[in-house]
Image 1 (cartoon, helix red, strand yellow):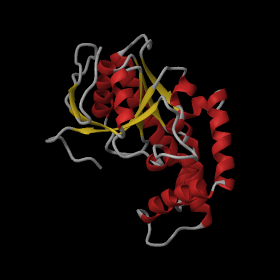
Image 2 (image 1 turned 45 degrees about the vertical axis):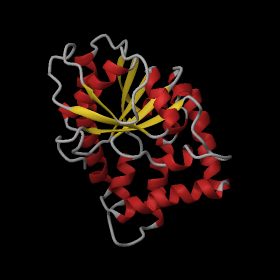
Image 3 (image 1 turned 120 degrees about the horizontal axis):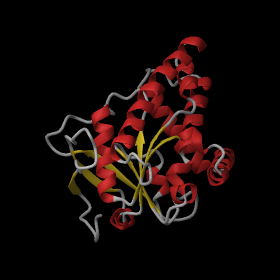
Length: 252
C-alpha cells in the first residue's frame, strides 16, 4: 500500500501479481487541485469511471486501471454508467427499438470488461468491486444529492449555465446544429445522473475520502472545485485525471 505524498504528476507502475492477465500500461496521474493530491496520497478509495461504447476502454485498459487502483488505494470501485444510455441514442436519431438494442449491446460489453477486471484482481470482492451506476438509485445519499442537483438546475443560474454548456459541447461533437430540446434534455438527464458521484462519493460509498478518476477532466470540475459559495464538491472528495504514460496509445 502506498504511503506518503507524491508530486502532482506521478507515474505509477501497475501491479501484476494478483491478476491472471498481466498489466501492460503505466499511467500518469494528475490530481486536479492540491487538496485532491492530499486525497490521492491518503489512499482511502478510488472510483474509476468507465464509459460505455468508448473504444478507449479496452478490456486490458480496464484491467490495468483496476490494478493501478489496487496498488494505490485501500478500496476501489470500477463504475460504468448504465442510466439514460438508450435515451441518449434515441435522442440522436435512433428509433426506440434500435436505441435500446444499441444500449444493451454496449452495456453488455462494458459490464463484462468491468466485472472481469474486478474478478481477476480481487476474486473475493473485498477491495476491488465492479459497479453499475443504477445500483445507487436506491442509495439514500445518492438520492439526496441527486434531488438537490435537480432543484439547483431550476433555481441556480450558475449551475444551470454549466450544465447547459456541457450539453451544448457534447451536442457540438455530434452535429453543427445546437440540438433539439429533446437532445438537450437527454444530455442533462445523463449529466445529472452522474453528478452525485462528482460531489460526494464518500457519503454514497461510506468511505473516509475518495478520488474520482477519469481519463479526462470531469464535467463540472471547474465549478465543483472553485472557491466561494454554490455547488461544490465535499471536502473529502477529490478528482484526478489518469491517462496512459508517455509512449502509450493516444487518449481518445
